[in-house]
Amino acid sequence: MPHISAYDDAGKLRSVLIHRPGLEAVTSSIASFEQIFFIRARLGRHGFDFEKALDEHIRFLSMLQREGVEALEVEQLLAEALDDSTTVRREFIESYLAGCGTRGEELLCPVREFLESLDNGLELAAVAIRGIRCGDVGLPDREHEPLTHALCTEFDVDAILAGPMNTMYFTRDPAVVMGNKILLSSMYWPDRAREALLYRTIFVHHPIFRGAELLHTDGSSYHIEGGNVLNLGNGIIAVGISERTEPAAVDRLSSLLFNAENDDWARKVLAIALPAESVGHRVHLDAYMTKVDRDAFLVDPVLETAFNAYIIERDKGAKLTLTHVDNLQKTLCQLLDTAVRLIPCGGQKAGPANQEALNNAASVLCLEPGRVCACDGNPLTRSALERAGIDVIAIGIDELTYGFGGPCSLCMPLERI
Image 1 (cartoon, rainbow, N blue to C red):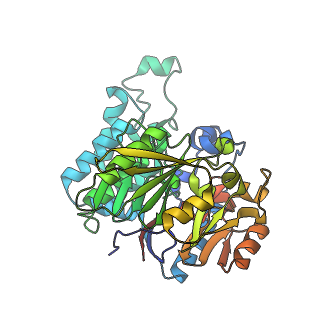
Image 2 (cartoon, rainbow, N blue to C red):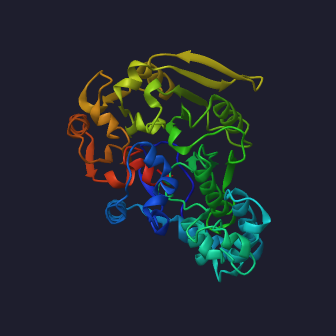
Image 3 (cartoon, rainbow, N blue to C red):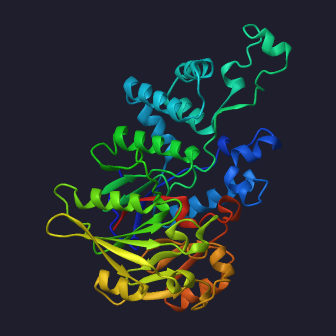
């Protein structure tokens, strides 16, 4: 049974949530690719090699297991939570329908009937993740819509009623453990927002998580994603500000953390504005900075050069106060109350044209203090890490991530010690 505890991203990794790519990552036609893989298509990638991605994920999971990390599968946990009671199942179906994007009783009623007809939680979880098409629910219905059929205006059997959650394997984004609490994210893209429903169902209703304290932002007016949240240690939470996480969301998170009852471990929040070039695919703080040892961070020089941040804390009157800072190393030393080493991503101290940084070199997963898993194909970064005394396990995950992250994006840490 996992223990919810992650106070320092450089702590020894004990357990994580993962999701192996499945039917949700397989398109039924070339025409549906841009609808299903819309984020990837925006960056000019018009294909997804499912077999290669699956092999990459299997290798990633094997690496975790060799390192002694317990890996829990999201789909299996969701199935077990849905089997916990008929009330949980009913509430999940209603929430799923509300967020699936389909409107109107003519379409929602057959979708509801289809979901309610599924035999068990495993089937319901699988369908919710892979998505629902017209053919699944008996549409088009030529008997009851003869005119629609005669005029060739009926839905195609492959028309999507609930989109597949094809980014589910990026399990770090919909939720994140901070200290002994779980933050449920408010996702930027509506299709990914539905992933937060799965996590909420798991953390609220699965027996092994029952009693865990949740910080709810999944219903917020503002967005915040797990890839923008880092546990720096010493009661410090860093949050990246980007299109995926607005300043108002950081204010709300700070209030939730500082107002938590019977727990004052969170002392300060470091809100870091991501560089202007973060529009596109590097939209999370963990694409620019990750902790690799108790006193060391792997940092993209672009972030260090253009460092612009605010320290948020609570004064004696419970009011949030801001202090502007513009020196990354000095700020980290001050907040962590120790000397801090910055290891330049790409092995250089400056330069915006850092190809390795664009290849997600900074997005490493710390397995234990001084030992990390990193994207293969970044020799300068690997050399810089090894010169700093960091052990590196390189792994190829290009098809899985394609510019959107590194090993740290593929699992959600539940426990670190």
